[in-house]
Image (tube, rainbow, N blue to C red; front, side, top):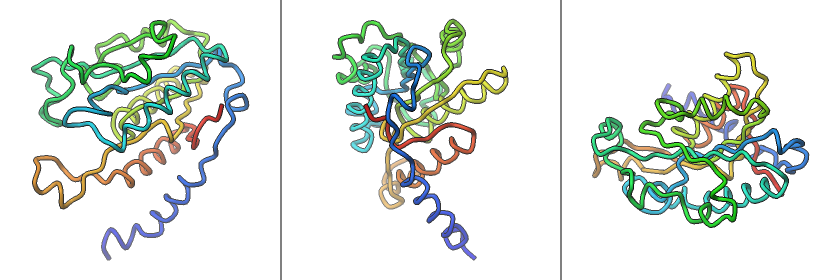
Length: 234
């Protein structure tokens, strides 16, 4: 029996599970905005608009994320962290993903949807040289300095790599230190790219089924105790 045949029932379940994620009202989901942080990963030009790893599937999340940040700020949230790729020219990550998002280039800049928010300069930006959010960059220090935070909203791209690494790291880190931290992922604020098997034949890249991997990794976040919601409605 093929893997496709054996997986058919689960894939039907997975699709229904993703479709059933609730749209949560902000004030009900986040009763204490002053104890909540938004952490955004890789919402930069090089993944949304320009460069070899940019994708039109990912681009729309920029507006959703900016709207969520504005709604959160209006309610008193003041802890917003941008974790962003900014690679050195000899980055070892290029062995897996090819050259992208060199530090100091347009690709490495925050998207305009976020940069034009009136409180953009009040956000903190931390740079990374790998898909992990917290290696050799001060991420843990930022979190540790905010003992009042008990809820993290994770947004960004891509669902199955950096957003997944960020959300699960926050949850597993909290578990390891016996901290009751809640991690929330709104599905309209994360996305991944698509590359078909046929199109991949003419490139050095591996195929990447965007819809399936988006759903699968959101499901795996939920398996790890992360709250996956359709959106956070203002």
